[in-house]
Figure: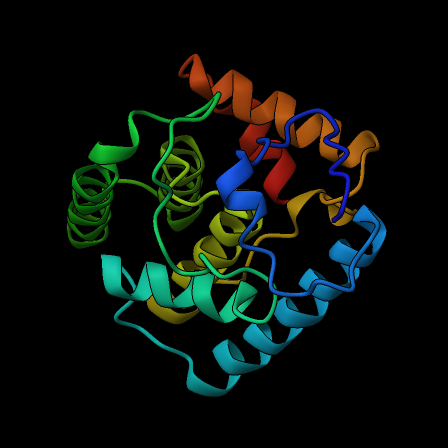
Length: 195
């Protein structure tokens, strides 16, 4: 069994979630990261090929997570069923997701904010809801890019132009920007997503 090593900003899995690992030959976190990344590359190809526009709904949000992690985690595409160090109670996830999708659809319809501002706020709320046991940041970034490209016909974000999976300056700035947004100050996140 793999010994999970969590760096700053990573939500730990509970024991039941850890048991959901499909690849029993994995013994290190580096191997897990590689398998997850390979699966995400498949999801990116699927997104690029299908270019879905009906994405602001629970069904698509779950499907994207499934496509990103289906070869690695048994619970891929399923909302978490335990509380975490971020997000609200697990039993309110469906309601929170519906509210977010309804709000985002209204923001798009009203066009009172720029596409970047809308996408930043969508991303922050999706990360904050933290709907899945793991992969929430990667999923939220991909959802946000799909929203920008496929729905609003805008360029996707650059996300600090560095690795957000491994510890380092880029990830540190991203987490800092999210924490600032938790306090309703979106300036760091605004700067980060287009650097």
